[in-house]
Image (cartoon, rainbow, N blue to C red; front, side, top):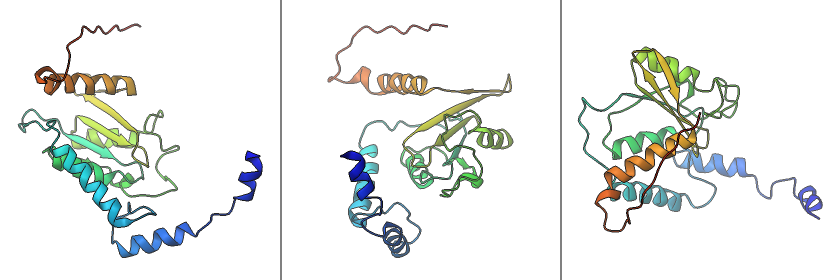
Amino acid sequence: EIAASIEANLRPWADYGSILELRTNSNGQENCVGLSDPQLTARMIESYYEAIQQSGLIVPLTPSTCPSFVYTAMHGVGYPFAKRVFDVFGLPPFQSVLSQQDSDPSFPTVPFPNPEEKGALDIAKSYAEEEGADIVFANDPDADRLAVAEYDKFSKSWTTFTGDQIGALLGCWLWEKVGKSSDKVRTIRCWFFYLR
């Protein structure tokens, strides 16, 4: 039954490519207008940034304590969103890997556009070393995954964090910046074990 339904629906019900091209042309450079209501999509995006600004997560940074960043969109849609988030958080602008900044479904500079795959961050890491940057951020093409790598200038080596490590670091940061002072959080004991 499922296979028959798939076979019966191999042809798209609408010419989505033409619809997307029409909407992209009528909305300028904005390539994330979606196939639904472009105004609703724009309002949702604005609401997202407003929620960040009102979240209490923005903390003042001094330029001397802020690391320098390189970002790669890995030929996807993440660049304008990452740029805006950096602005909202008051972070200094990142350096973008220009050869991977714009959307390109052929992914010409990576064998597989998953930032967690071995070698996928090589161009960004190399660029970061040239620019003297400390941190590489990378999104996959639809910007729903994040990879982070940190350069150690003393050992001249990179540490690429796993998803679990990124989650633990973000959780610790949230606890330090928000959780400890919140009257909505109940303190519990928690231990982390690192097993080799």
